[in-house]
Image (tube, rainbow over all chains, first blue to last red; front, side, top):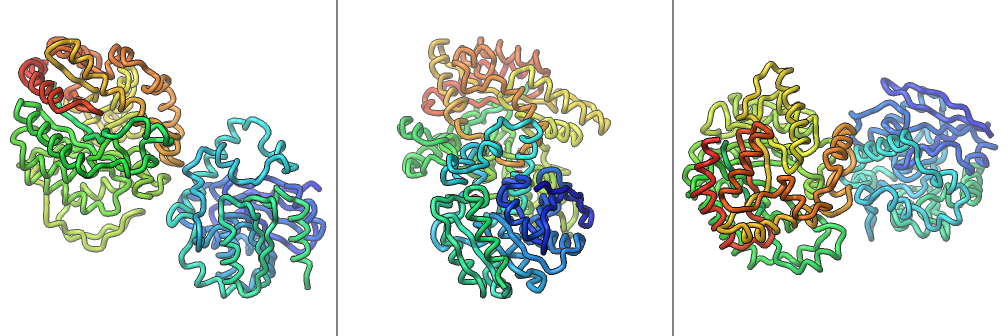
Amino acid sequence: MKPREEMIAVGETKVPVLIGGSGRPLLVLHGAGGNRGWRRWMDVVAERHTIYAPTHPGFGRSDSADWMESIEDLARFYLWFMDVAGLGKTALLGHSIGGWTAAEMATMRPESIERLVLVAPTGLKPEQGEILDIFYYPPEELLKYTVHDPATIPEWAELYGKKPMPEELDIAVRNREMTARLTWKPYMFNPRLPHFLPRATMPALIVWGREDRIVPVICGEQYRRLLPKATLSVLDRCGHQPPIEQPEAFARIVLDFLGRA
Amino acid sequence: MKLYYFSEMPHHEYPDAEGDKYPSLRLAFPNTFFSPDIAHKNYQRYLDEYQLADEVGFDGLMINEHHSTPSCVNVSANMTTGILGRITKQAKLLILGNILPIQDNPVQVAEQVAMADLISGGRVLSGFVRGVGVESWWANTNPVHNRERFEECHDLIIKCWTAPGPFRWEGRHYHFRHVNPWCLPLQKPHPPIWVPGTASPETAVWAGRMGYTYVPFLVSFEVARELFDFYRQGAAEAGRIVTEDKLGFLICAVTADTKAKALEAGRHFVWRMGPTLRGPVEFFSPVGMRSRAANQFALKARSVSLSKMSYEELVDNYYIVAGTPDEVVDRFARVREELGIGHLLLEAQESRMDHATTTRSIELMGKSVLPATAKM
């Protein structure tokens, strides 16, 4: 399937959005690594849903948004985005900091989120362990921590096998800077979020890799406890990137959840 | 040309092999190797050495601040300056400097510098720095905001010193509803401002625009001249004339009774060129702290890392000056000739350079070097 790209302006900020598939809308929010384009798991899910995959402000080729200070700002941006894009009541899926953003959105306007999928989201302070400080490590070392086993990842060569072009390196720096802008302190969590999560009463699916070395799996348990209608699915032999580490299994779990009555 | 004495107040009394086990001596080397007993003695010693430098006639004493590192346990430049303000008599007290971006309360910085200026009878030169990345980690201040916070913190401090209180400050990063410091500098309108530079062209331009004294640290003559050109560009934009009094330079220097002794002592500076700067780039320049222009300039300025240079190369290239007083005078004259500076800052004690060597160097500087540099 070949998605199309549209530039969508939300207030003063334009962001590129990959749109593909057919069916009820699914808004997909990427993690700190940026928008990795149209991935294998999306092909499967797009058979039953229209996927909207924007690039966050300040990431990739999106407009800058140096005024933003927190993931709550990004959540408010995407609620506005939903209005501008005319998504109506939508399913929402977010990975890592995109998952945190999705969780915030679900607490702010629960009536607009039909179903919520959180994939290894940051946002909560782990009851045990710590969220890895991603800014403390060189990017090449960090990449190793994000997955369980590169050898098992079908899209690894396509995503990380080539030496990055200068433009891609610039984008990587940009992505890291914007992530720092949004998550620096408190690092990767919002102490107020647990108090609001019970408001998010839509059905929710939490997906985690059992070998996640970035965000401890215990955070998945915490989200499951705080969200009134949540189930937690933990994938074995999987790290922090379930969508690319196990694309088929991941797509099946997501489709199964979204398709439920 | 004015000469300044500077010690980083190192705490190098641990086995080097232990430090080598960690990715960096900064942030990562456990403070279980910090010895309060040794530090107690070291602080007395380092303050005595500063006091001696004042007595022998150094024009200024430079004081700095770092955190989470054995290379510098002077963790409060303002506290040290307050002490020196009381125990020294004549030297300027150059704080170089307060690390502005990591401050959460610029009003308190304004008060502390003012207090040191009052205690010292108006001898403070107030340097402002952006800090190395380690300081941003130490304070957990978002490095993405480093330059914005530097400038806003500076603006608020200057306003504290120059505008009558009470006033309100609602900026991007700082918010104070009742600013009214009851401690103002003796010097009017405020102590002279100094700014160091290692790689950032933006800082050089900014310092030039503001008319502040600008001091490149441990760079080649060629890079220093480029930074001074950026400084002059900023000065020209603001219609300012650049005099040598606005330009300084920092190097490491030690003298002794014989050349052999001086060269032996000078080897202690190698520690600060290599081991104490070892570590991932993320520690020293975390995400967003430097602009792309600064990153590119840094790559050029440090095309050969100081840590890769031999002691002899460091000496040949004027990063370290070590010799008899006469030789040191010649070397300083060359630095002045190359750069046209009015201030030469000497990192004059480092690593495990002992008290006897340090004090002898200070005495000889006072006796034979300072009289010569005063005429330069």
